[in-house]
Image (cartoon, rainbow, N blue to C red):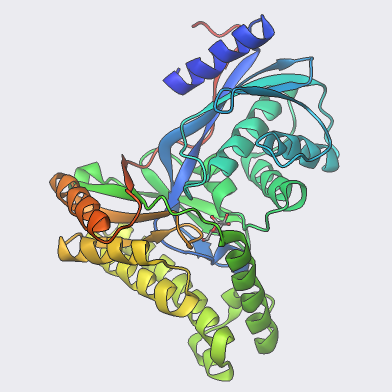
Length: 377
Ligand code: GLA
């Protein structure tokens, strides 16, 4: 078992004075390319990171304990704007789907940085969903679980996100990115052997609170919906470059990002299949420019990181996730990650920005049941 899974198991024993019946965990994610395309019915290419939320679970009780917050909250059908709303939302969504689950208790432990744009919320949802599926023998596939997790987030927690994060957390495979068609909900793994290519993914958390993120996110979503309606299509996924001529102003800029970004995701998949990392990197930089100028979701910190990555000859860099703060990623040659992070640290300090945090990730495994009662330790 992973250390974080051991931690959840230990917390369960200490808190509830018994052995958990099973332990599961699910990862956070970064997105290689394909931003804000998910709720436009388009394509995304995320991969799971090596930080996870683990849950130890057993029948009975009705208490939820978090080691991160060191507090116990009741399982409830009410929302109280706390971390517990994520597991509660998953239970609510499973019940809504007509599958029955009994009382359970759970202890959570996680090392996905919170509020950094690495999807700690999808990780706790996915870990909860997979554990409940296994504990109560629900007849649900991973894709169904991901859709239920998204429903929990949209309707119970009240955040109108797309399907990318939950799909990534539940369906990613080690050593691969996940191409998702967010309209058909078909997904396929695309091998991403960074190590083999002498490359690494450097993640820079700019530590900028995504304060306006929710408003900004909803505004972008609304503008995309207006653009789709003006073009007479259900999703901007169905619009092409020609159609853009019929738009103007904000709708044109937002739609131009979505149309070009969808094309870039498919080109990035081709580049990965051809092991052409130079081309993948070029697409990442182009994606950043589109998010900065057309979708307008970047910040001066994210722009600075991407610029410095360019100066350091990193093959690719872009902001990742919702934007308005949070994280950027760079594709770097293995030995150059340190030089880039030191330079970024220095320049951020000179400009009076918050001190950034850095992580290096290789594409990790999606959600897993780590142990059931009766498994040999
Ligand atoms: C957030 C949302 C996702 C997606 C991204 C932007 O992470 O949760 O559904 O829309 O922003 O690509």
